[in-house]
Amino acid sequence: MKNIISLKDLEKMVRAGQDVKNLPSDAILTPSARDYLQEIELRGLKPAPAEAAASGGKISAPTKKLNSKSSKSDLEEFFNSPYAHSLKEQICEMGHRLWKRAYVDGNGGNMAIRVGDDIAICTPTLVSKGSLKPSDMCLVDFEGKQLCGTKPRTSEILMHLQIMKHQPKAVATCHCHPPYATAFAVAGIAPPTCMLPEYEVFCSVGVAPYRTPGSADMGKLVAELTDQYNTILMANHGVVTWSHNNIEEAYWRMEIIEAYCRTIVVAGQLGKPINTFTGPQMKELLNIKQSLGFVDPRFGMKECELCDSGDWRPGATCEVPAREDAIGKDPDAEAMVKAITDQILSQMK
Image 1 (cartoon, helix red, strand yellow):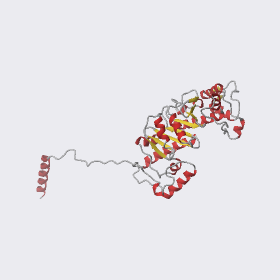
Image 2 (tube, rainbow, N blue to C red):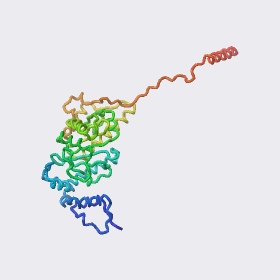
Image 3 (cartoon, one colour):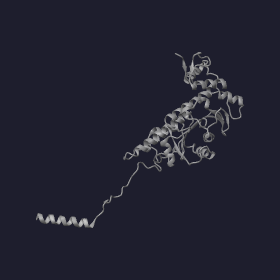
Image 4 (spheres, helix red, strand yellow):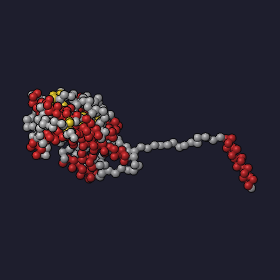
């Protein structure tokens, strides 16, 4: 039986410091594995050192700091390094999760990771997040100019870059279209607060007005909200999140806000008053949130000011007008009925 080698097999070899070019002569490569080998050959990607495997597979960031003014050779060397490859893999993994959860459709959604003073690795345009590969990724400066990568960068990169320029803490950004959260964006309202602890700790939600996707104006409006919010609904568009830790945390926020929006929509249809946290309970959650380094405009507010249902109204009501007799009243019929009734009563007497 011939040996079939997948992309995961090659990546495992790289993490172990093995030579991926020294494969059995009868090995059959999957398409993604073949692309990966081509990337190594074309870009000179060096396998991760063996010590990376000994440290749990974690690859340290290069000590040399880079920016958009760095030489082309330095940028290429970094972009093809094991460290950059590990970041590309993380983006691909998050993209696959987004696609599997139906948070993206077609080629929608995009992500970026800050990797220098004014440079970032990002997703390409016109590629489904369900089929992303490390070789698809791009390196751009903070003005949107592509520095490395064979596929064109995402058309919405300006929004991600403006978030990173405005918010120095932003390490990673994630944008997609989860249906329930996007429904709130279409309605132009933030979800009500004080109902679920995970949402209160990990998300802080603002709403940005609609502008053409990919435009500088859209990016500016979103970026201005990042001082107080880490999860932003873009009216009639979708959701963008940012993290000061990593791309997975930005993705987690997508799962959390989507689950929360779905839950409260269902809860609002049960015909029962919805229970909310008390002021002291919310204060405890916000203390946890602040200790984790997250942003929230409610830090420092009084307990009585912490909960807000905004413009959200649970459930739906339907008033049915009083039903009128479809036949109506016929005077002749009424007179006949009365005559027959009188005759029957007379005979009974």
